[in-house]
Length: 100
Image (cartoon, rainbow, N blue to C red; front, side):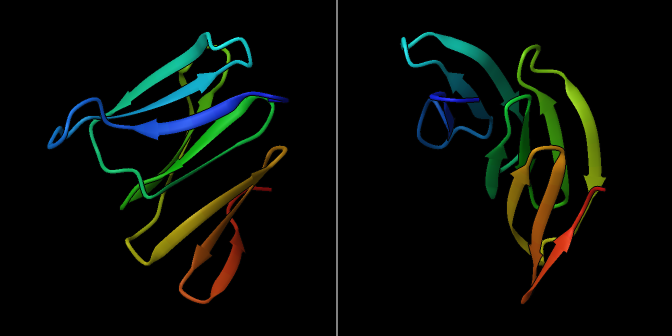
């Protein structure tokens, strides 16, 4: 979303839960999502946040923070890019379209 910041973080060193926050230009946290797994990469569009983990790509609604979709991947996927409703992933040395 325009002017918003999407941030992946942990609250404490050594904590296993990771969080994703959508922060508006005013500094207000609009969406706060907790994941029980490591985050490899994140990307966002105006309506969705996509998260790459070791074994999946999870797509969340920005407005509600709810899971909209989930795709299985393996640990050879290294990065993600969301452009509108399309999600691209880097798999070894190739860029693949994960969604149509």
